Image (cartoon, rainbow, N blue to C red):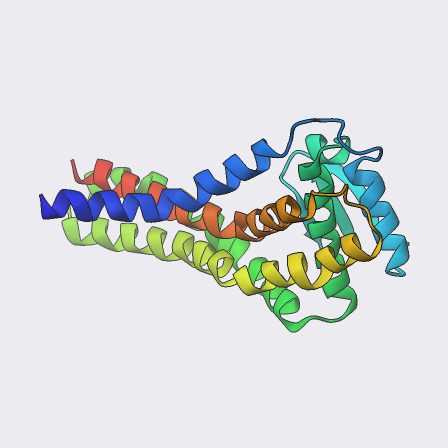
Length: 227
């Protein structure tokens, strides 16, 4: 019974942030036409105000993010073209990262370097885990199989750790960069400020939630492998 309770608690701890982030984003995606400007239009205006006219704003299918190497704010279609509170708040958050880049914010520079190093390792780890059953069957050695699995976990786990450690940087982008711009420019409709704060918190937790889900998926994979 105690084991079951502990398992449920761990699953809730891991899944909870992801569910909360998704719920918050969806909740404020309606009404879809709440604002007279789109997320892309707001991002462009905020970047110009921050003396960053050279940074482009593009639509993407790979998730909302700021690319510090190519100097591009990328927004998914629902944020790029959307006029909801979620669309404009997430757009402001990503502009916050662009402003961090302009200010040579050390945590952003560090994360950029780490992601460059770890991205190949993530692909390697996924490949290793996929090949682990084949290697274990071919070698007929439990020790060899365990080494392969450990290598896969370490490479994938390193990516999850990097994302989890970026929470302070994400909170800075939301509340030290994006929120002041939204408040000074009076972009928010009266009464939307508390909701925008929740959205900015959710935007900051996005990577952490994704990292926790990665760890959960790894645990599921290991459970399947042990059968």
